[in-house]
Image 1 (cartoon, rainbow, N blue to C red):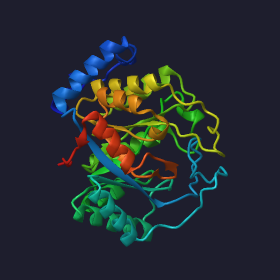
Image 2: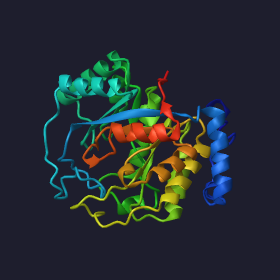
Image 3: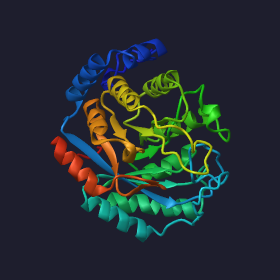
Image 4: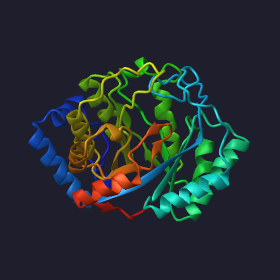
Length: 327
């Protein structure tokens, strides 16, 4: 058992599956009220952080993640293209900053980070984004402790490495790396003193019990992630999950509310899948404790609402862009 009070978290770890289930399955008004109360105790409920995601190296990934159009295992029409130039990425970051984003995330479709020219390019991008006064996040697959240290020295704010789903359901989604390998990368990131961005995807055919299992795993990371993206699957033609029905909207709200209660200080990000969500559903997600979104027209290869639609939605809800940065 670990004392989590310094983190604003629960006093005792680990949190059990039964405890997580009791929160997740509470009557909706009680769950929402509790999540809103926790949210207000730790955050300004009227502010939403804007993050922008850039696909710095598209396609051709050797992993077989069943949801991913960038996997070399599936024919999805995604082109395998080389790494973008540093200047092009920094131009994207400048545009993102000027439209209100405080965090710029860069994703490369790699299984793991290899030392060499491409990694040096990523380090240059990180330094450049930090020089623009933005938070810098990357998602590059598996990392060694030494690579995490080099990213830290370049000024990296956060490293994204999602658990995707519960430990039990995971083998049905990915066979090319294990759950424990994912957790090991998260440990390397944490040991280097970089913030952890770690969440999952709903709507991949998992059960409610799997969603509870995912939230339990995230909450039991010690300390829990500073940033927790909750994605709704965007089914892509050519992937094994192309025909998955959309995740139930209220399940999304329950997952976000539970994440907020279990990880009070984290930024809970309403991430992929927002184009399929009504304004009312997104509003419920913000009420439940989501306080971060991805902006822009695309998330890697799938559609996203775009800045104008987001500005209209936030204006309708009386919400504003959160200008604060990670320290």
